[in-house]
Amino acid sequence: MEFFLEIILNLVGLLVGIVVGTISYIGFKNTGSPTLFRISIAFFAIGIGFGILATGFILDDFIFKTGDINRGISTLGVASQTVGYWFIAFSHTIRTFFPKSRYLRSIGAIPLFLVSFNYVENILRAVSFILLVYGAIETLISYIQGRKKTTLFVAIGLGLLGFGEFIGWYSFVFPETILYVFSILIKIGGLISVGIPVSKIPLRKISFDENL
Image (cartoon, rainbow, N blue to C red; front, side, top):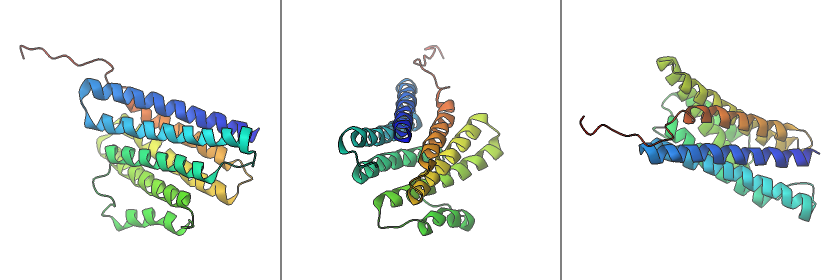
């Protein structure tokens, strides 16, 4: 039952990523915004990552029957999502790879002490966590300065994605729990939160008065 739920939730993540990515790409085509182009790549990459993970679970459920997703497929899915997180963080917040503040750098370094570098997937999750936590903090600071609701949605979304990634890593420490399911649910919520401002972009081409 839990395996089936993980497949369904990953497919939902795939759907959310593709839908928001498509909306972003339509917005890019209509506005020419480089930011929307990067966001479209981000959501497509994250959605594809969910799709790869869903495929891994389906293959194991019907073919391999080992009771666990293939490590190579899992790593590929997480890598795709990491690329997406990088594009989201870059589009909204990142001007340099690490913040100047020593306090923020110390937060970003925390996951490096929590993971085993023997596994590429753990390293990718650590990188994702660093990007998302930094992005969430920087976006929250931007919200405090500008008080824009769309910025708050992005900050909450990045925070949820980061929290979901952390729980996703922790689920490998306790594989018999439902932490992985909670991780997917939280990340889907984060994607939706980040996607809300994207849904407000123009879906039709912007026309200008030639007499202006």
